[in-house]
Length: 305
Ligand SMILES: O=P(O)(O)O[C@@H]1[C@@H](OP(=O)(O)O)[C@H](OP(=O)(O)O)[C@H](O)[C@H](OP(=O)(O)O)[C@H]1OP(=O)(O)O
Ligand SMILES: Nc1ncnc2c1ncn2[C@@H]1O[C@H](COP(=O)(O)OP(=O)(O)O)[C@@H](O)[C@H]1O
Ligand SMILES: [Mg+2]
Ligand SMILES: [Mg+2]
Image (cartoon, rainbow, N blue to C red; front, side):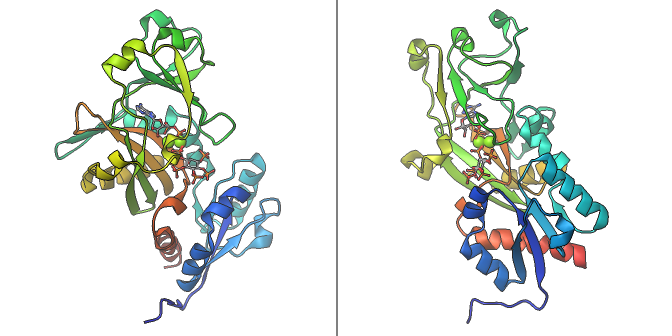
């Protein structure tokens, strides 16, 4: 049977992304799969009013300039029924490492025997007395801004109080939790959810802690490929993955994001959310073409029903 399934109705989905993201996300395989299922992916020129590029059945985007936001607002005013995936003001909450975890810092999801929370963290400011921080070392210093801008992925492992002096303040300081070097990335696209394993920072032993001093920079650990320990790591329960995705989708009001989750090596039923990313690198998911296409079909069909 032919793979091609030409749908009766065609939908125009506009995308506004940076050139690098167009290259990684709008791959020919996605274009083709979407097209075969009735979705025409149309590249938007963010510098031209959207109305001139219409019609669209849906718009997806990852651009943050005020200029782009204004174009979106103008278009929405004229086309209130066209879904914008997602509203810029809601995406904005993920650009701050404190507000991104806010929905989870104030609640703890329990499912079967597992719990889901966030590591102990604070916003370290120059007014803090570093002798009396309510936080244990080792810790990770993370830039408050998580907007993809310069430096937003420049993190530091901090082993002791002296290490704090190397940091540019304010910064988010989060307790490092040993988690067996394995990270779970939960990709969400509307009601569609996929969880994959990635390499993460290795555990830090008590012995290492006695010798490691100060602060060391690191970045993009999960980009550096899959390792042996990762392959054999048990996945989190599917019910936990689904419930986390559902709860976050509802709390954040967003459709396109992923969540970085670790499992406490000393308490294996304790899962911790450490990061949430807007419109992440879906193309790294095997078979991301149907994943994204069926999400887009969910959206356009819900709005044209
Ligand atoms: O480029 P990729 O595929 O590594 O995707 C990045 C994401 O990687 P992931 O899918 O979680 O492995 C990445 O996730 P992490 O922060 O590395 O967990 C970010 O979402 C990044 O966006 P930004 O630089 O924060 O705006 C994403 O970068 P952009 O492609 O959106 O610029
Ligand atoms: N609290 C933590 N405990 C242990 N490892 C962590 C913690 N926070 C982050 N990491 C490690 O650092 C990596 C980057 O941190 P993350 O918060 O995801 O920032 P980024 O937005 O740059 O991906 C994570 O993928 C994980 O490997
Ligand atoms: Mg991350
Ligand atoms: Mg991130």
